Image 1: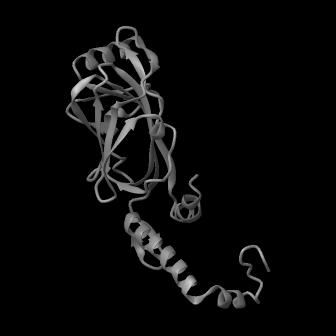
Image 2: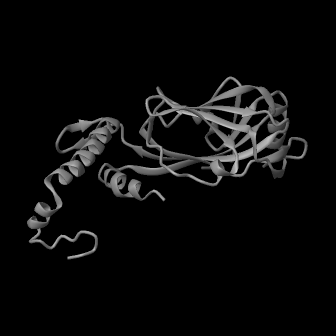
Length: 193
Length: 43
């Protein structure tokens, strides 16, 4: 699903010693008329690239027994979320198209100074149990790049992604035939020699 | 969940607080109506 993430982000991760990580939590959300704000604060000792937030199946929760019950799929419950500079506030209701699909990676640089923000809403009248996983990659706070020297990973990642884009656009401008000539005409287009 | 944790969850959610459970929840999550429970420990 994340083929382009693997293609273009993986080399950066491997080269600059990114470490894969996830935080998987259980949330018990009480019924409330007032939204509840939550800050997810990454490890202060590293730079964090958040690649996604996924949810399990929300279920009714009985505080008396600590047991979970039937699924709660409803537009009356969910979370708004945002990451300053990278993701606008938007609504993730706990409905099937949100819970069952994960169409794009987020690629959000988050830090103690700029935490990941969530706002939980639960107007179902029920206590709700849901698990959630924050998928992320941790980088050292400073990384060495042979071109730019010691860098902030977030700044270097922007340069790297711009480089990928510029390179591909430049290749298009040069033209496939000229590029093919560099390889003795052996470069194939559309599967044909 | 242990009986102790279950009791704490019940107490907090009945007050209208959202509970987050994770071994390092208190280091990672905050909010005026958020209660982090560090569970299970041992990592």
